[in-house]
Length: 374
Image (tube, rainbow, N blue to C red):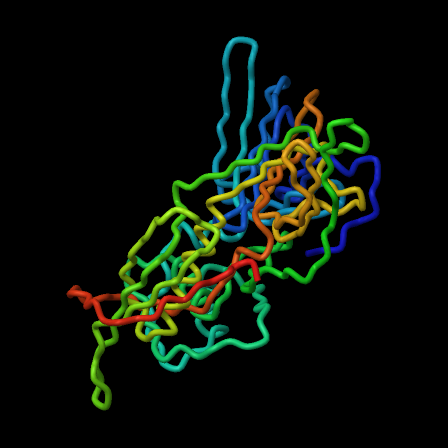
């Protein structure tokens, strides 16, 4: 992430740089960022009392979104809504970051053998105009074969290549595509406090949501491998992974044609358990302003220390998403979405493009208890 500038009086001023012009007077704005949702988004609303429509603002125009002197997003305008009514003349503009073109568009069709992750990424993103790429990984593998078919979106192709190496893609504020993972070694950037006495409180609202709807006590993954000239195929691959934190018996069976061996099935099971944990607990905090007490903008991937006496919470959490909101006469707030720390785990899991339909056997497989907090 970019180093935050020294806090100034205009630290909360949201501005859009479009066509060489800066626009910064809004009746309302939203700026979203979520690690689990591709394409961060923004929307601004403003009045046009003089009826002057900015000529450089048009769909597809490049945009840099800033708060104070810090860039928070680089992308393009998606949509413009120009409204005129009785005693009212408004303009609403929305857009997304660099991931938008990958989500919307198909990947270039190509087939490659023994391709590195960097080569796959370049084949997917460069035709769509993305040239700034960084891979945050000490080691990546080589794909035996990559086959991108008609209809595959660029984002899905990118995600499959990243997940095969236990990584995940996102865009930095300056427009750089990063393929990496969470860094749980980073110290918490701030403390959120909610005490009954009110002393030292810096949280406006805090909601603790827990759910068992998508929690499971165990995942059983069934896989298969096709035969080759030297090895016979296997159709009875099975691995069961347990979540000891779910006390009720809630089993789930998943058929995964990409799990071609026992280790791949176990990795898939661990990933399903961690995803289930993520869905089972969410903390949503509303705080004043857009920055930490140290002047750093709130950003997904940060770790925060939360103390809430009413909820009985005193622990470190992972910032999965944040939303900046504000506007004329509204003040500035940030909504933070927190998840359990060290639970979002990315496991290497290759994907195939086509799968044969067939029966899955019920062969033997071990049961592996897993504590995903470790």
